[in-house]
Image (tube, rainbow, N blue to C red; front, side, top):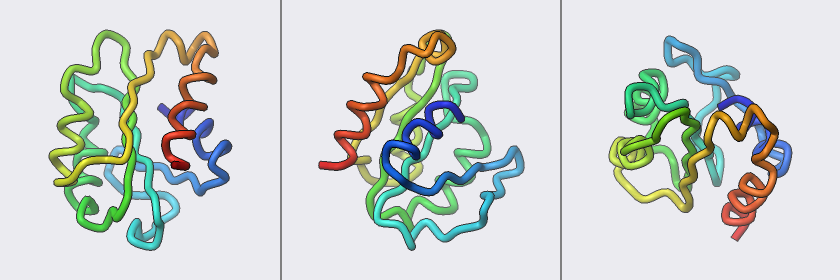
Length: 120
């Protein structure tokens, strides 16, 4: 998940924040101060991670425009839909990245397409 986040941030020239196991954001920033926020999660038990669920529950209303992605090993199932439901509105784009492809370094074209969608 972090590898994908770093690739997106590099291509977008954006800030990168990490959400800890406890749900704290480092650095602590207000998402409403951004025109676009990209939120990624590993798939845990066919759903978003607990810290991401907490972040989206607390901050979903503050996201004017947002995008989602999930990294998965077996199947992402309804992870992206669950994230969207927590925010309460549709993301501008949502994507899934398979862990095996990330480990093999085979995500560049998919990240490029994701970023191109964000820039539209």
